[in-house]
Image 1 (cartoon, rainbow, N blue to C red):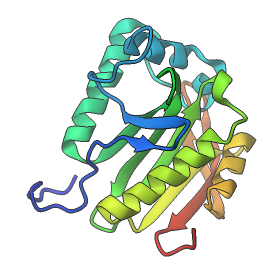
Image 2: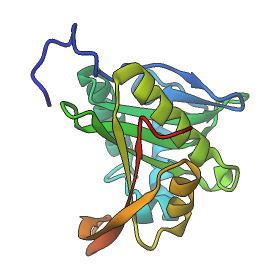
Image 3: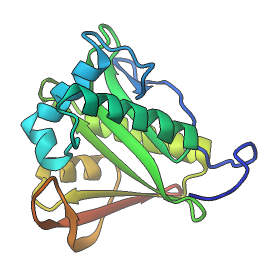
Length: 198
């Protein structure tokens, strides 16, 4: 993390609610109030087989782990380096998923974006819309110059989201990431520049 004065650092990611009409992107953290309890929603997400396969929420399947997840979200928002949003239904507040934007090289203006959706929220284009919205927000509010998106080669749904959200495929990274306790796996790299057309 850059050691600059937070008061003058224009590249801080600051909490904000993003309204997409039918869903709201709300900052994750201890103050987030979800129906049935926020910790319970995190635990349910961590237990979802597809989320566990591609985006493991390490240790969040139990209450202490879920609460630690929320505390990490608070502290990362406070540092201004990671913006984690809960995708929630605008009508009833239910959790639909997650989208996160975080700096990988703040000095160079490079960030990465990731997402997951609960089963009931899949197939509605929410991951694409949330990724597009958070990307535009990062460019507008924090001067993000390049946004990278990584997914396991076998995660075809994420590949479709990346393409629909305007992230061209740039290459394959060999044995680049370990999902859960599995082996290191190849990933596709997609990226979008702030200067790319909407």
